[in-house]
Image (cartoon, rainbow, N blue to C red):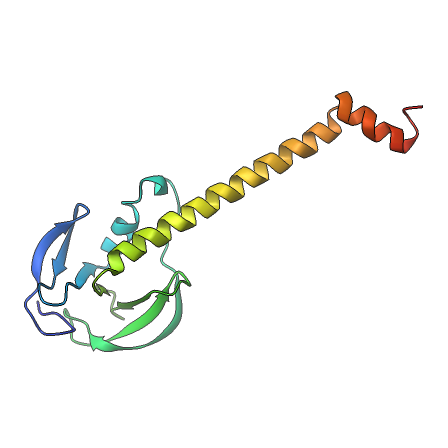
Length: 149
């Protein structure tokens, strides 16, 4: 298989435990269709999280699929400022040099955001429970309702 950027022969390598095709010239990587999910799953905190592919701003790519030779689609990965290329026939994804690291960074950022949101939701629930649960907080609010005189 040849690199869609420069035509060099792609070499098989193991990257994050995934067998990918690597271009020794431009340092790009070809991931088979299921391997992008596998790359996302290398972020430890993704266990049990939904990793469905989200594509924004699809447009024609400037490269062809190294498997079928058809023009690929470029898209913004998960609405971030990261453009990836995918085969319309679902053969795989082309990641230019450094983009595999950006994918992992984005997933880590999304997981941190989900954890912050879950923590804030739990704290808010605890706060509301305390308001309803009695004790000092309840007597404080009773004063405003006329019950603490």
